[in-house]
Structure formats: structure tokens, C-alpha cells
Length: 166
Image 1 (cartoon, rainbow, N blue to C red):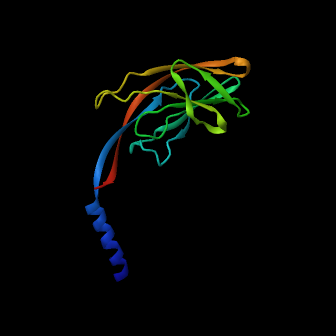
Image 2: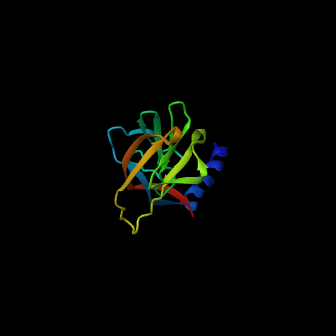
Image 3: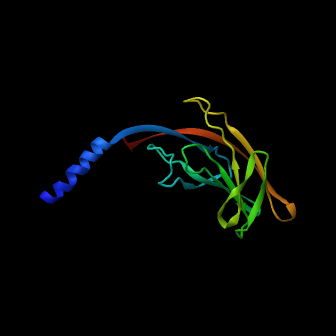
């Protein structure tokens, strides 16, 4: 009993003195529901942006004839949207879009080209930008367009609570 008290007392004191509660907020990209859009995965536990009142979709998917597109909302405290496409056999496909930019430094699973949407942070605290319409085409072999998609991206704010070190 005495030995455990020796370890417990300093730990409690450190928590009380060395930490403070922090109420924060972050922003994330959310895709508006559509007939073919589906949620694939929630954000993982280590994500910087989370909410205590529910979950945030981490990945969406949309399928078309001969392709699967994955839209990843990232895991940072600011909004991100990464997009990649592949055929049913897992081979990478290209994307054509005026809004989506091709990354020159990052790749997606199976060495697919990774595209991203440049999202400006909110202009003022408490304000959210207008929804962003995103249109793109999935391109297969010989530059054949396999399908085109139109989605709406909304920037949402999440509030959370944590303990920060002093």
C-alpha cells in the first residue's frame, strides 16, 4: 500500500499542476450525401480533428463503371481532401479536374496518383466558407474517360476537449 502511494501521489500532483483543460476547435471537409457516395471509414484515433459528440468520416468512396474513387478527408486540424482512383484490379487511374491538383510529392496506396483540393481556411473565427463544388473525370487507358463525378464539399467545425501541458 505504501509503495503504491509513493507512485500515485506524484502522478496526481503532476496532472493537477502540469496540465490544464483545453477547449478547442478544428475544421474538416465533409462531402454532401449523394446517391452513390458512401462512407468507407471513420477518422482514426490519432487524428488531430475530432469531436466528442460523434464521429467524422475519414474516407468516402464512389464507384463507377470500371473505377473506384477514394476521397480522404485527412487527419489534420485544418480541412483537407485527397482523392485517388483505381480500376477493379487495383491499378491506378488518372483524374482530370479544374479543382483537383495532382500532388508531386505524395502517392496513394498501390502507387496511385494522389490529387488534392486546395481549401482555404475560414476567413474569420466562427465563419465557414461556402460549399465547394468539385467536378472531375476518371481517365483510363488511352485517355478514355470512364466516368465523371460532381460532389459538394462543405467545411465543418468540430469542437473538442483535451488536457494540455503547461
